[in-house]
Image 1: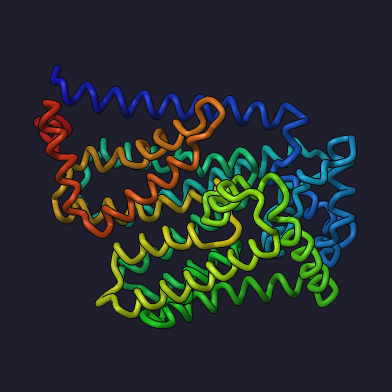
Image 2: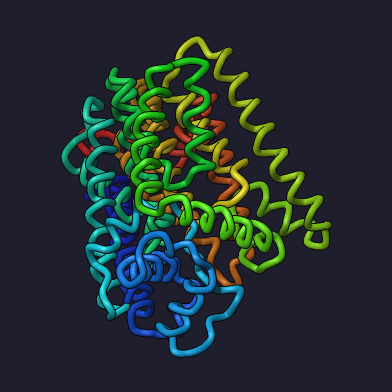
Length: 417
């Protein structure tokens, strides 16, 4: 049996089995250990759903009621630094209400089933975006499974996060944009309204170039906004602004503000003693400065292609003020953009390209070894490498030379390329 085939096959099979087992064990611990409810993102969604069922949608943003409901679920006063305040647009609660009842664990299991289905839909769309690349069936399965098991996606999945809607929306956006349907792409991007700060960063550049995408995003996001406002009414809107103030005011002094892949998280980890008000000013200034820089670069681009889309996602992950590890699920967008570029230029065998999401998951997983000190070092290394290769794809030839040096010249033939 050929050496190149064995090494690649072992990596793929070992990677898939290892990630699946890790996720299964973490999931079992999440649903069977009551203490794991502390800090679980589903707690915020669930408490808002139960409040909407018992008191009505205008009360879902009442901070005191949310804390009271969450304390009842766990059976003790909920820790203030672990309170999962619900601050997302209200339309998502319509979906959560389909599975939420008085039993938290059962509701969480049903919610996870919905997240798996939405993840599958996202991967299906991502695979459609590379359907013209002439991947073998084996490589298609490798790419699809690697994308489905992407580590940041399952970080959100295990916590019951709704970030999968962001991935679904950006997947539709990328696929339809490259398919020549800019307005439909914008409608898909409207789903990113689940993260308003990110939605603004992704949609605003298209006002400069690609206005059909911009207006599609405005329409899609606007519809979801109208639905949310209709549900909560003026009183609920005031409560929404109040709870945003509570969360934003405490954002930079609670421990979870350190645990972010953004520039704000990097600065907090590096300069922990910085004045909170000064820090808030710096972070929001960075957000608007990033928006302006993206706009300038967008205007200078001759056309909008894989490079611009991938870099836009990477830039948004850096400058958005508030995002956690699970938001890194949208790294799949620049990964698939890079796959399209490298395949079109013939710079890397398709077997290597198909294993890219799996490889990134393993690199990110290494960051959790020990005390996890390397977690964000590896995140930023991956982001930098993706950005570098999107700008200079020919530099991948260095990896090709390494492949030949290691004696794997026959990898393409071994995998039917």
